[in-house]
Every structure is written in C-alpha cells, then in structure tokens.
Length: 92
Image: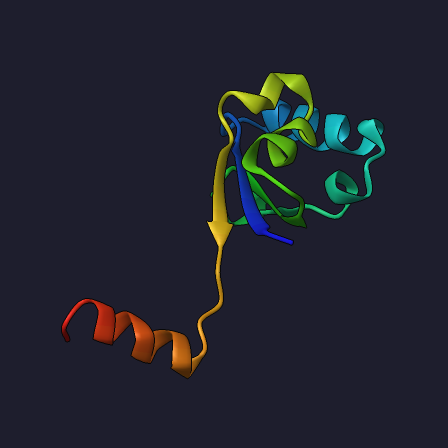
C-alpha cells in the first residue's frame, strides 16, 4: 500500500497552535492524535505518516479546515537494485 507524508501548516501564534492541536485530538482519528508537531521549535506544522490508497484518501484524514493547506507527498523506499535499474534506464 502506498505511504504518504502529510504536512499540515498553521499560523505561528499560540492560539493557532492550541486550536490545531485541540482539533486534531477532538477529531479522534488515531492518525491525528499521533501527529508530530514542530511548534516548540518554531516550525508551526504537524506531520503524519499514513499508509492509504491515494493522496485523496490521505487528505480526507485531516479536519476540513486544514485540507486545502496540507502538503501530501508519496514516499518511496529504494533498494540497491532499484537504484541500479534507474541508472541503467537513464544511461548513468
């Protein structure tokens, strides 16, 4: 199943941090209650890693107010064989 990193920014105020964290926890989703936050280091974002079928499905995990601003990236791991195949394919 594909794996995605969801990055959810919010404003850099204490009130915005509290609202975001509270909404994630009130939503009750396992994914949301286990988000990692950068607020204490001045990076006002939450990160969640999920295994779901699509980017759209990953976006639907989020509370509605944060869906539009979220960045969702599909993650891939590469074996040495994958790297060798890529290099052959691209003539490197």
